[in-house]
Every structure is written in structure tokens, then in C-alpha cells.
Length: 547
Ligand code: ACM
Image (cartoon, rainbow, N blue to C red; front, side, top):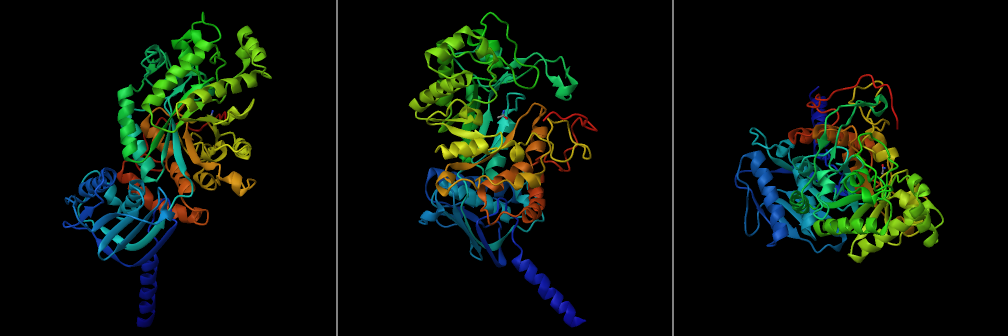
């Protein structure tokens, strides 16, 4: 009997020693050793004397101080938690080494960005309470002895948030950025304009926000119900607010890619400036229905000048190398019927209206490139011929991305099949969820996505920059609802983007995710399945799906 208890204890101890910390995204290499380092009142943090590195150390100091209730200071000289510059070129711009042993924690990286990601891993090595916004007592603040070497699989790892259909307040945008950074995602694609709302202040064209940011009502229930709430809806970001968000994002190593939709999804702009549309005499109204409108920009010279002016202000505001110019879902009906458009097709020797779309994108590409930036467009920009410097965002499956990569264009994978986070995340016929656009995309399917298609050669595969999850917000009216749709699926997207193919394992991810949810609870994230998420108008049972 005694012997069997002894064997059991040995077994349990072995399991404890070998238990892998629940880090998401999973690091490339991680070894544990018996023992742990405990943070206490005397713990200090140090970093190389440099503004960027100093900010990372300060961020860690403020989080540890807030959660532990002990002032965990930054110091000159070597602290118990020490950020150091690494000479290991293999770490690249974003990788890091982290070692925790009895002396403390050392995080080495080539850049402050790598150090920042090392810090994210350190936080996940600590108890979940470290994410608390107020001091938690009775916690033993331990870091298990580990050696981590970690580099990302892809350079582009992001999420898109549509604020055209529903405006999201700046406070939430910052929380969203925090959550991206926590999961080592480095791109926030901010979908700022659409038929149902223009959400960015443009100084030269004030009507874009005075008129274009407000629709007179919004659809109620599902699209197929065809009901409206009769209440005006609006909101936009001033340029000062945007600058504030950009500073916040830069401090967290998140690049913000603005999207200005063209030549389609333009109704809010046309409602503001009807001269940009097919019929300058028409009274265009900001869209109230979801879906795609025939009202698109008419590519007259004055329209192209308007778009260049808007993009000039956007480029002045956003430091991003990439500027997203939309390009999706542009019906050609009005161009087919327009004398002007047909004459332009002839004059420019274009094949048809698709050629005209390509003409517009090429003009815009040339302009954006002349400003030292690069365009991204949805995969419809392939139609009628791809513009020379365009990066393609492949959303209607991966085929557009494959074609673009074969033509030596860069690609970001974001297919509806796996990473459209506006779809139901469980079967809507059996699991109660708030009304959504439709579809059915479970986290296991999201996780199974492989961004680099096997049909591509190694050379072509280099054009797959990474992966992004998209949240369209037709039905997503509030930040709480946005969090519900984004998480935890967005975390699966983060792991696809960061972790090695060999380390990808859904069962293992699910186990880590269960622990990770406690961290999200401390951060007040309203993920699907969270204890706090019972605050929606549920539609039950869901009768009709359109997508
Ligand atoms: C898209 O979902 N229309 C890019």
C-alpha cells in the first residue's frame, strides 16, 4: 500500500514537473525545469537604456504593480527581471529568448518589439490574476523555471474590425488593440468606411462625417425580417482621436491599417457628395439596409481627385506601410449604363467594366505608391488584371490568394470558410446565440486553417504574408457583442499566425485555452462562453440564415 502511494506521488510529481505552461500562441520551443521564481516586494525590472525598451519595462512594471499590489519598480543596473539585447540574428525583429531560473527572469531580443512579446509570454507564465486591474491578495506570484525560444511563423498576424456598420468607441478600440498585442498579433485592419457609415474625419470634405456618418435608421432583427428601428444612428473618429489610437497601438507594436472602400461600398460618401456618383442630381441616402449597393463611385477625374485627397489625409495620419483600398463587391450595373463610363472604357482600351475597376485600382495604386506606401485590396482586385504593387487579401476562399502568389504578389489569407468571425460559432439551431449574419464557424474549424496552400512552390509561398480574422458588424452593435464574436476564435487566428505548423494541435490548444479564459475573465473580455456574456437580445430559435 505504502509503496503504491509512493509510486503515485512520484507519478504526480513527474506530471507536475513536466506540465507545460499554458501559453497562447504556443511558443516555438519551451523547456521546463523543476522549480519556480517568486515575485516579491523586492523584485525589480531592468532594461537597456533606450526609450522603446524602457517603455516595455514600464508597461511590465505597471501591470505587475497593479495586480500584485507591490511596487515592482524599474531600476538602473540589473533587475530580477531583466530585458537584454540579444545578438542572436535568428530571433529577427519579433523573436525573443526567455529564461526563468532561481536568479529571476531574463528576456533577450534583438528589438524592443521582441522584448514586448517576451513580456507577453512572461505574463502568461504568471498566475492568471496578473491580468487583474486591481490588486489580488493571497496569490503566490510564481514563474516556473523555463527556457523559451520563440519566433513567429508569419510576419502578418491580425484582425479586422468593421466600424462602418457599427461605430465602436475609442475605449473599446484600445481594448481591442490590447487583446491583439496580448496574442502577439501585430496588425489591426480598421474598416473605416462603408455604405452604412463614413467614420473618419476628413478635413477637406467635412460633409463625409456631417452627413455620411449618420444613417436615419438601422435594420432590426435579421436582414430577412426586413424591419427597421426608426432611430438615427451615427458616430465617427476625429483625426485627434485617430492620432491617439495610433500612439496607443504603436506603443503595443500594433500597426493600424486604415481601409477606405473604393470604388464600391461608397454610398455614405455619395450621400455626402453626390457629384462623386453616377447621378449628381440624385439624393443619395446613407445605407440603412445591409448588403451590397449598386451605387458606386463614378470614376470621373473629380472623383479620383476626391479619392486622392482623402487618401492624402489618411496617409498623413497613418504611418502604416499598407493602405487598404477595399475593392470588393463593386457591382458594375451603373458603369454598364453610364455614357461616361462606357466612353472611358473605350478611351482607355479596356475590355469591359471589370477592366474599368482595374483601371481605378491601378490609378489609386500609382498614387499611393507615389506617396511611398503600398495598397492592399480584397481579392476582387484580381478581376480585370492585378495592379503592379497590390497585396491581395484573399477572402472568397484561398483561390484569389493562390492566383496572386503565382503572379508574385503578396497575399494575406482571410477566407470566409475559416476566419469570418461574424458567423455563428455553434449550431444556431441548437445553441442559443445572438442573431448574426448566418454561417456556422466553430473554433475547431478556424484553428484548422493552414494559411500557406500546398499547391504553392516554396518561392510562391513566400508571398503568403500571414493571416487575419475579420469581424463585420452588421449585427454587432456593441463592444460586448464584438468581444463575443471575436473571442475565442480570434485567439485561434493568433496561434495560426504565430506558432509553427509542428506545434499546431487543436486538443492541446483547447486545453491551454481553458486556462487562458481565466486571463480573459480578469481582463473583462466577453468571449463566447464567458460567465458574463448574458447581455444580448437572443433570437431563439434562429430561423433564417442568409450566408
Ligand atoms: C468582404 O467580406 N466583402 C471582403
